[in-house]
Length: 190
Image (cartoon, rainbow, N blue to C red; front, side, top):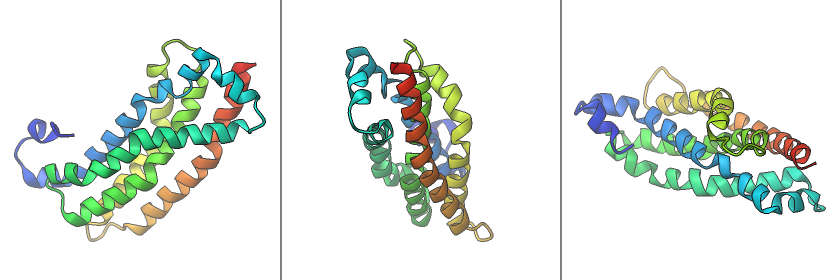
């Protein structure tokens, strides 16, 4: 994100206009980086089978792993987003809206990514396959997150409706993602 101003050029208005989209794409790419290792390392050392065979539901184990992944990838980006927003010449309102949408929307990326990581857990190199599986599914989060961020600074565009839809997408995926990933992991371990 820090090299985008060098690539786009010195047009401050253009940087401010594309700033929320750049921050969201950065969040998406940062989340994708560690997804291939979400369950792979546990599978290699045998602890995934032990976790799945425990009395805890597989969906709960996946949910906790998703929260840990989000804390390692999404949360630092949310904390650093105001600084990156200044690099991109964003207005304070746009920075606040982008931080709010990132805080609400980045968990959805992790929950969808967990399903992709579970599908590819038996593969040695599943990173590219995860990206191919996950990218089309995270587009709604990306679209509504950027739309809400733009809605905070542009007059006719709304902020509230895309933001509420983004919250709904995240809550839906917080339930569906761990359930689906837990089911797939149980089948992979069996």
